[in-house]
Length: 307
Image (cartoon, rainbow, N blue to C red; front, side):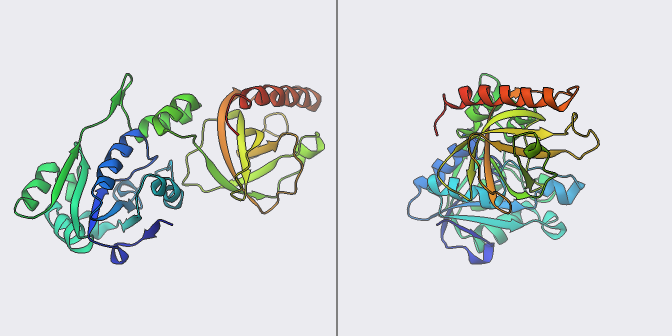
C-alpha cells in the first residue's frame, strides 16, 4: 500500500510534485502523470498539513479529501508515497530558496520536480517556477512545468469543485474529479424518528474538516465498513424542519430495501443526484408519503449508475 509519511521517512531519491492536491481533480492528474513517468525515482506527492491559510489567516479550510482518503486514489495513479509537510509559523517564514534547499533537495532528495505553471511557495509566496529554475540550474534535476488545465467553463480547480458541491451540482463535480465524490462517517445514536416513521436512518458523524454537498435530499450509494457492495440509499443533509426545526444540522442515510444494525459502523456515501430541497410538511404523514416518493425516484436514478 502507498505510504502516508513525514519528510524524515521518505523513500528517496524522488520524482515529486508539491501542492495541496485537494480533490485530485483532472488538473492534478496531469501533474501526477509527469511524476510517475520518471520511473528511475520514487513517485511522490508532497502536501502541507494543515493548509497554510489555516495557520497564516486562521481560516477554516474544508477539504475535498482528507490525507488518508487520498491514499487509494494516488496508489491507483502510480504514486508510492504521500509526504505530509507539517506547516507551522516557522515554516511559513522560510524563504523560497531555503525551502528548495532544505525541503526539496535535502529532505526529499528530489531528482525530478513537477509543478503547475502558477505554483507559488516560500515566505509570502515569493517563490515561483523561476526561483526553482535558478536554484537548480547547475544540478542534475529535471524541472517540469505543467500548464493549467482548462475546460469550457474556465480553469479546473479545487475551488470550482467546492462551489459545485455546495450548489449540489454533483454531475459537473464528477466531470472535474473524474470520480464520484464521497465521504465517510461513523453511525452514531439518533432520536429514532426515522424508524418510528417506518424509514430507519443512520445518523453519521462526519469529520468537520470535510466539505459536504449543499443541504437537501439525495439519491446516493452507500457502502458499509469498506465493503465493495454498494447499497441504494436516500440521504438527507441539513435540518429537520418537520420534526424539529431546532435540531442541529445532520447527515442521515436510509438504506433502501436493506435492514441491518449499523450503530458504530463506518458508512461511505456517494451522493449521486439531488432529489429535492428540504420541505416543512404539515404533519408526519405527509413526510412519510414524500419519503416513499423519494425512495422510488432514487431507485430509478441509481439504476442508471453502476453498482
